[in-house]
Image (cartoon, rainbow, N blue to C red; front, side, top):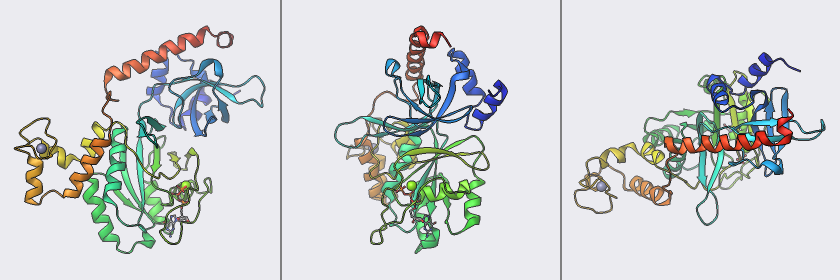
Length: 360
Ligand SMILES: Nc1nc2c(ncn2[C@@H]2O[C@H](COP(=O)(O)OP(=O)(O)OP(=O)(O)O)[C@@H](O)[C@H]2O)c(=O)[nH]1
Ligand SMILES: [Mg+2]
Ligand SMILES: [Zn+2]
């Protein structure tokens, strides 16, 4: 059995820090049961425990709400037999999470990952530049309480690198734009230098842009499968099918995700204004505080369009995202957070009355 000190150190390698320890203490959580979800399939999870990775399930008696996702800190315990999967008992309240609107009809939230510090929005330089797509990813990343960066891959295949980069920078407004090629080791190392030990970075992007390739290069070994893109339209073949968190040399944690076909937005209050600070700033000058910039009198956004200082397509993208987003409770709302914590406390109480938990 590893000592308590060793346990602490090994989980620290997976992002555990003093703030988490403090929170666990305040919640009365048993810190010897802490583990991090590093892999997720439909109904099975992989958790990183102090003694190593273990597959885990949710015991039917205590279904945690919310369900754990990759990146979550959970309380987990081994099954009765050594070969049994571990049981996930509870999910610690999240610091941040990436939400999108679930595919299909009807609006419902799908949480892609939790406790992510940074999102790498990955796009291939062998593709056509798509400003609207970048804006959409930026809005989702900002809204999740993480800081986004744009990673342009395959620079060896770029037709006009400078044009691509300047277009990306025009859309990114202040977000770093980094350029990398799998064929250029120095560019990969430069990317590694931007990472800090213990921080969690989620890669997001369409299939085939080179997310898993980048994870492998930064891991200095093949941990994730990769696959050729289609020769015609250069679209990927959705090679990665599971979300998985990898620890790389240098100590950062990279979350490889399956390629996204269509990124639908979920709640976009903060995300929308952070992805479009130019439009938000213009809107300050509108006569009506709730101006929708759709032809109201005294609209500063419309004036900027007429003056040619605002791209009508950018405004179109903004309005489309705004229409698509569901405005409900703000995630950053302290009351919403307090509610999450109190739900958790109730769950813990119920759990502690469980005979199985009591005996441990
Ligand atoms: N020329 C070149 N090819 C690259 C580069 N990065 C990735 N590729 C190739 O692009 C293809 C797709 O790479 P993957 O890493 O599988 O892409 P992915 O984003 O993980 O795709 P999904 O898992 O389907 O979402 C592979 O054939 C890679 O070898 C690069 O910088 N330059
Ligand atoms: Mg992949
Ligand atoms: Zn207006």
